[in-house]
Image (cartoon, rainbow, N blue to C red; front, top):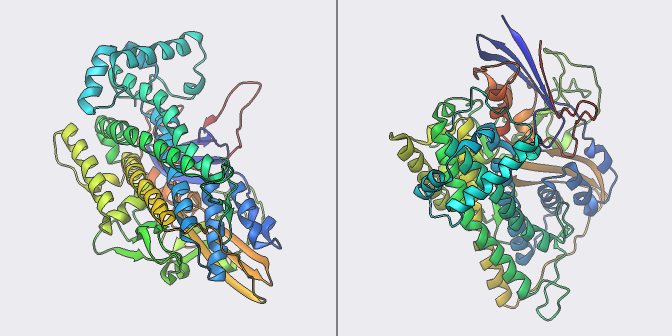
Amino acid sequence: MVQRIVVDPITRIEGHLRVDCDVDGGKVTKAWASGQMWRGIELILQGKDPRDAWVFAQRICGVCTTVHAITSVRAVENALKMEVPLNAQFIRNIIQGAHAVHDHIVHFYHLSAIDFVDIVSALKADPVATSKLAQSLSDWKMNGVGDFANAQKKLAAFVNSGQLGIFGSGYWGHPAMKLPPEVNLLAATHYLQAIEFQRRMNKVVAILGSKTPHIQNMAVGGVANPINFDSQSTLTLEKLHYIKELIDEVGEFVQQVYIPDVCAIGAFYADWTQIGRGVVNYLACPDMPVDTKGEKLSLPGGFIKGADLVGGFNPIKTFNDAYFEKGVKESVKHSWYQGGKGALHPYDGETIPQYTDWSDDGKYSWIKSPTFYDNRAQVGPLANVLCMFAAGHEPTVRWTTAALNTIAMHLKTPVGPDILHSTIGRHAARAVRAAVLHEEVGKQWTMLMENLGKGDFTTYNKPVFPKGEIRGFGFHEAPRGILSHWVVIENGKIKNYQAVVPTTWNAGPRDEGEQMSAYESALLDTPVADPEKPLEVIRTVHSFDPCLACAVHLTDTESRSSYQVKVV
């Protein structure tokens, strides 16, 4: 008998992603992903000064605000064919790298690990045995018996009070939970430690961006960070060296805690390396420009067709790459917008709302359906890592190989990159990306200091807008995947603006050719032990790190319910 499961909302920090699944014989047979809120920022931007677009665009989200600010200024600079001062490129790169490392730590420990970790079970663990286990995994300085005993006391206080607080939305005791009590205590302890280390990395963003979220230092043509080593009101040597200190502190956590934890938990859930595969076309963009024109980038990107890391990889090389610019289209066939024109290129994109209620075979989402040369694509850390791996990026190859070798050691059997095409694989890729980005942030800091040492203190070039129409696009490899903004400017004002965000790629409804998105495809054949508690569905969707837009929390103040599952 087919049962319909409706999980709405499905994320821990947002309230407008709904997932419907038909379950038959204990497995998902059909799936629909739906954005339940209209963004509309594209219409707000029409007629605005392009220099102000980034301020509005970063309000698309309350978490990944930085990425929209950076991508927006890149789009306008691309339309103007502007060069950006080296110091501005390095400062932007440090901000975006620090933001991503912070984001990846938060995603694993605070937003998705508790899909696999049973907090209540951790109370049964022996802190001595947990410490011995942890020290066998890494040399992390906070893996002592006292560290685990203290964390266990904090967890006991939560449980004994009857108010699980930050752990309140977990399916404790669910039959799909597999970890022994000691592994649960290890992960829960690192959950608490991660709160401090993600904060330190985000402090880098706040210092350079003047605040976070919603940084204040972006500008079309550079950044608003004056550099004067004799003035405490500007970016000084003292502040720059404090930033480096923060970066170095977080590196130990990423390398000695985050990666070992993901590998160990992934090995206990080895069956999840065969679940959640979904769309295996991968799209990621190059990033971290180290020249003024955006033609030389530290991190490679590209498109992988059909999981073929050798013959199926086509690189995207620069900020002006026509291969990327010509390949993107969006369909609204199954979205609540006026359509009928087929899939449109973002320069010609339309965002005209037309709500018609839910229909399985018709329109069922506010999200559009992007394609790359008519192919659906998965984006995100897995796509990014696979593209950099295919491009032979040395740090990515090194960290990916190390992670796979660690998983193989736990499983006592060889494993290859194919296990990454899965729910667990997306977590492993995110940990690898955090290590790669952490190294890269350190390199960008060194390049900034070397350039300042040459006497170059320039951070801004003034933009000049011509009469007539110009077009441009900007992209950025954000924590959740490739983000692109597209702008058409006429006589110095925005005529059209479209944002194709990572979750649009992954969570869109079926497209013009009825192809499913990454979410919908990945959910097929997912086992569901208890339709009333569809933990397995949540695991796969959370592995993508959904981010439709932030700050919508659907909490029923009468029942205290933070989300609802319906089984029809």
